[in-house]
Length: 94
Image (cartoon, rainbow, N blue to C red; front, side, top):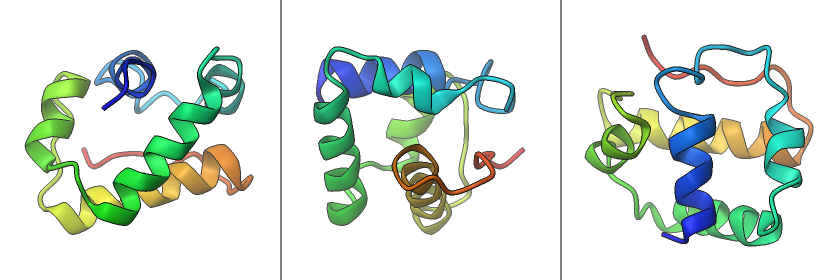
């Protein structure tokens, strides 16, 4: 995973911020210097299913998904929110 996407997950979708929908994640991700790289890699992760629930838990500091299908449903919804103007911002499981 590229440093840009790792940083986005770690700092913008971590356990502290993932449930707070008051942040404009679109603005955050699109002002990153490597914004296009983040978009491309997130799309590839979704397409190829290369992230596990353990990977996501580790990188976000404790966001747990019950299974891979729910993780990819969330990541797909997040991609749609960030890049296809889907509303609302998805929330991970509690």
